[in-house]
Length: 239
Image (cartoon, rainbow, N blue to C red; front, side, top):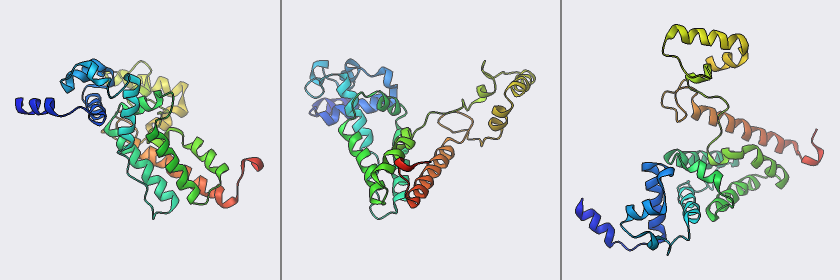
């Protein structure tokens, strides 16, 4: 351990090393634990040494986003456009699942980073290479929204608390009573919550199979874009 620490201290500091150490720290301790001081401690340097490579924490976060975006698989050049976009988005999803804090940081950026712009440009380019018009591609990107990054905001709280806004009850009889009361007032919500697929390892907790739900929605959107493309749809003549 001491030898590893000594080696880390001897390794020259660089922007890439700073950013990757910041990503590792956020993965291990959470994004809330990341500060210039905590990162300096992790790298065994004084905080001022970091400012030679990143101007401030905002620039650090921008760089961390680009490290994550760099983990997304490159476009599949020989694939049909729907399959190519699907593969790219699912690769983005895998990257963000490896770094659960990343989606919040991406959403928090005021200006897109170069890595973000490169990725979005690539996805748009795949639509255009598939023959979709710039008009339809514009609306397709809006429809995809955060799905282009591999995450979505859940419609329902997918854990047991979806059945009770007060949270799950330990007593099965009490919980059943809460569910009956919920069903009496919100029958359609309870109906579809109870019809859900279960995924105990879901990143959003026990409840819906979030990977299935994500792919289900993504495939619906891509199929819809293809249908509109074949129809020659334009926003100027929408009905």
